Length: 297
Ligand code: ADP
Ligand code: MG
Image 1 (cartoon, rainbow, N blue to C red):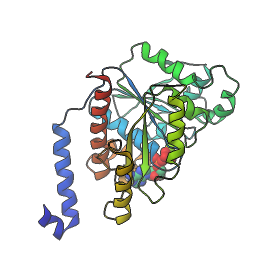
Image 2 (cartoon, rainbow, N blue to C red):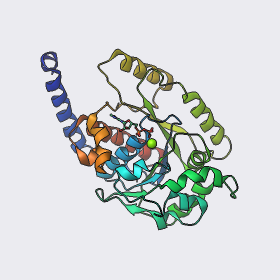
Image 3 (spheres, rainbow, N blue to C red):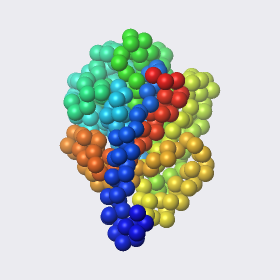
Image 4 (spheres, protein in one colour):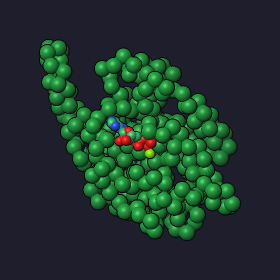
């Protein structure tokens, strides 16, 4: 392989993709014994939360897990990428938060992915931060609805929640409902800046509103491993956070960024590209962690 990579980086990439595909096709995904709620959170915008949520969900689905994606960002980008209707008036996460609907009432089947359900977000959700202030149990609205849904015995192994880019009441609701947090970290110079605020918020919540909560996973995204900067950021994150970051790193990939404009995840859009393979590898790692956290499903 080294001879090839020395001559032609493209050939090396092709060979690596082929190795990954063979490995993935031979691997068995872990399955948690009870549904696991994963909040995908980072108050910074543009770090890859939505991209990570939809692509991990799709890849877990391909791996045989049954996934519910809850879109908790008023922009509704996760809903778009998963190809579900989220126009004005569509029953959504907002209706669940204000108590006008249950999750069972609002979830839609993802058209391309038989194992993926979606609770869409509409523009209504942009009003929720303010409306929540006056509601009863304002930090527990999503947790209460999620508990009711999961107790009804749905065929769901994992719930992945795409958080908005803030630490407001909607994100707080998600963190109170979650078993664990997955933090996407963009591989850039300021990667660690802002993380301390997120980590102290999570610590505060686990000390009061949700003792289960912990940061289980970080995922380095948009990396360009050929650059020194990318390597340095990766080293720094790994030295700070030990085993929390997944081994898999998501490369910057045009295919990943194109997929949403076709209402698709990269897993269905181009399942052979490096970005899709990276998300499938990350999902495999995550599935083992979910299984380890709950016992085998
Ligand atoms: P967030 O939800 O944290 O705001 P997004 O997932 O929306 O972040 O990603 C921000 C932008 O970066 C989007 O335009 C997305 O398409 C792009 N992007 C995310 N991950 C990748 C990647 N691995 N390669 C290329 N572009 C990416
Ligand atoms: Mg987003």
